[in-house]
Image (cartoon, rainbow, N blue to C red; front, top):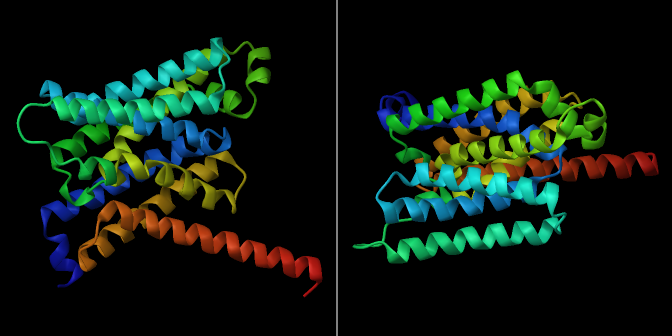
Length: 276
């Protein structure tokens, strides 16, 4: 079957569009996440969203709406505890991570009738995203990008140095919670593409690759978004042609490129040391 024929299918065009939308927001928010070194924190938020998915099924509402509510609430709670209680961050992330997953399983168990298929939420299936959900993703991404545009300077200041930001009369604690909430909304967008479990890789790895080529935040965002589009598009085509899971294929693709880059960089450093 030719590429032209495949592009004639609405579900495939929807998948490509969802991948592009997710890649854009992933490049922007992922850059803040990687530079701020809060990838594991983003992982805690993404897994806590599973509790919202289970709650959505239990209450009979859209599971993604439930995931959004749970993820935002978790992000706000993490930010508040981080600012006030000075708890061990790893312990706090572990509690949010496992607690969210446990609540999701519990709500699904309590849901009357047949147990819903959760595989698409755990590992993603971008080939099944309907156009109505793409519209919702686009609206969410528009809100996230507008928020970043309006508060860009504050977000950058807090990302690089919270204490310096405070000296510049920026409410660093509030801005940090705001950044976590934006990360939570980005996680919700990415759940549609790669699922709860694989979100961290798509959020972090394109940025980690682009960081090897540029140190400027703006350039990093643009390059990460372009790389994200390449990886999601490549993963979608590979998933379709080989009849394999789309979310896992996208993550394997981006992971392979990252590993090749790291190994080649290591070899270059060794050659430089030994003068070969």
